Length: 119
Image 1 (cartoon, rainbow, N blue to C red):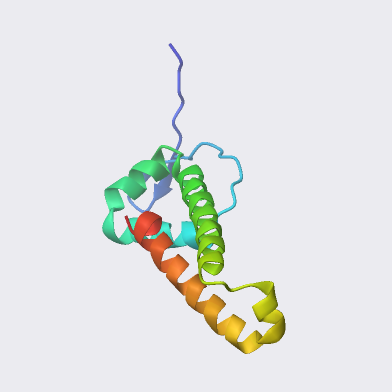
Image 2: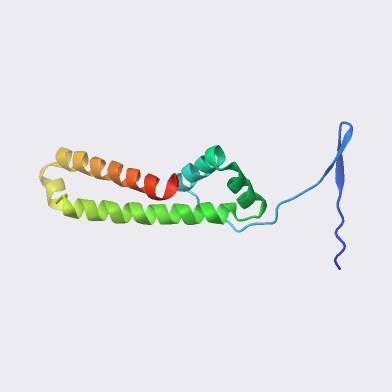
């Protein structure tokens, strides 16, 4: 049987336990992971705090972010091929290429948000 020693800190009239979360490895979390974190905080607080207190939140958000970035890249590639948005178009008419790529990127972001981030 392990003997865990709990320490306390006086805060006014109360003794509060000194609790620390276990060390977690470093993970990259970018835009999609942060969006999902905000979504969890706003609409799924219990799930968010369960992940946080179990030490799984950062890895979970990193995995969501990685999946979302992979899906985004795949969608942009597929849509640009389907709509014939090529390097040739970029060389011939850069403004049109930018307009069409922005449209593709916006649609890809919308799909990623619906499929992974806000679900």
